[in-house]
Length: 214
Image 1 (tube, rainbow, N blue to C red):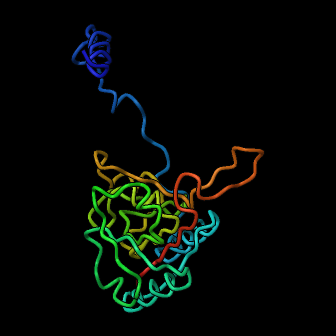
Image 2 (cartoon, one colour; image 1 turned 60 degrees about the vertical axis):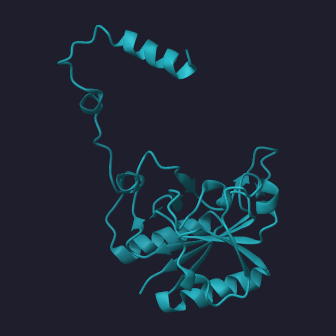
Image 3 (cartoon, rainbow, N blue to C red; image 1 turned 45 degrees about the vertical axis):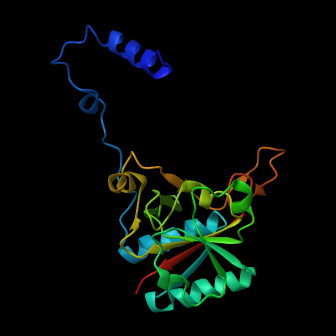
């Protein structure tokens, strides 16, 4: 018997004497918390996202769809990136203006190979303004989780306003809980040792977010 089967068996035994007509858990637990803190326009919500991203030390850029390729190319050039990791479903036009070598996301890539990649460019599933959080769900334009954890530089494109929500409850409504969700609030960092902030410990040292919209 596996650990999973043992745990589920204990749950079933604990619930064996619960009457079937008893109120389900989803109804018994109140869900009356605020869905959004304050009232904001779409523009104010996007501004709040940019402000909180920057507060987490992410680098925020804004551009129109027509300028996106040039913006990404400029970011890669400023970084001196010679290689860029590309998820299989990323729009090819996004990288049309860069000379950096495109490296495909391969299942057989080792962590050492990924560590030698200069940058990675992805889209996102949703962005949360109140927490300054970007959520990836492993869709084709975002790739597998490890490609955004190993390379040292991550460029993430957020479509504005359709991918921006105010709060975490609103984000959860858009996400599939069975997908591999990665929640990113700024570059990877820790202050565990003597409260000294160290970046790049559990993921990219540098996170750049492009808010692209008209």
